[in-house]
Length: 328
Image 1 (cartoon, rainbow, N blue to C red):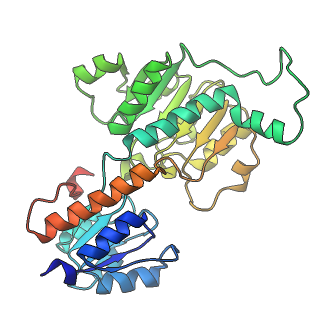
Image 2 (cartoon, rainbow, N blue to C red; image 1 turned 90 degrees about the vertical axis):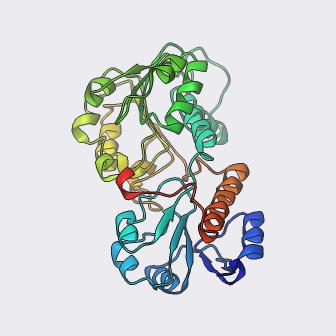
Image 3 (cartoon, rainbow, N blue to C red; image 1 turned 30 degrees about the horizontal axis):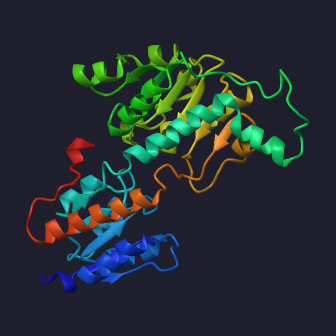
């Protein structure tokens, strides 16, 4: 099939250079108003598209895949995570699923480190105090926070992003610890002078900062549940730039309200885009609108990866970023 006759439906507005390049290569249907697809609109797109370019806001269920048109051969995810796609159902129907790994690593790690710095030093509270006219001049006891140098950070998920966080944490003098499904190589452990914990419970009970950097999978759903959250020290902070579902949000809010932990920095939420009003009322949290990878560079490179995946598939070549259900 000639590339320019391949029907590519894109579910969200992408960076202009990406959309322009796709329009040059394929028969592209753009989402010019950037409104998230409803289930009906998503079903219609899957019925018509040869290739569907999805994002994390598209909940592509087994039912939708079963009812997709027979011409649909590829779901090219604009994003690293694929927890919004039933990859197994797609594979059973012969639909290839791809993602865009790697290009988000440094930007997400930067945002993680920004939250790790901002939380103990009360940066957002300081900004709010200035804007509210509460600052009356320097005082020895005003806006006291905590230093991070010499503290222990426990990284949950030692993949690309976890390792990038470890690199930054070491530069700021943090002692790096990690828990991962599989232990990383001795060379990586040596690079970050990091300590591996087979037991997540034992690790989090000894850390000053917890950074959540694991993917959202059935195995990591509510990985930090009520019992585990109670293991944290009262002065500990939690930072999550992964997926909201990894933490039991209600249990986290209760712990924050009760002062069982010191604070949380969240870029993701369990019921996005809805934010729990109890979270919004807390003073010991920093809340961001899922902007960990929101840089021009990252989003453009993500689009380039989508294009490469589609081109390789159409040309009959190996798809570089294919997602296999057995690897999730």
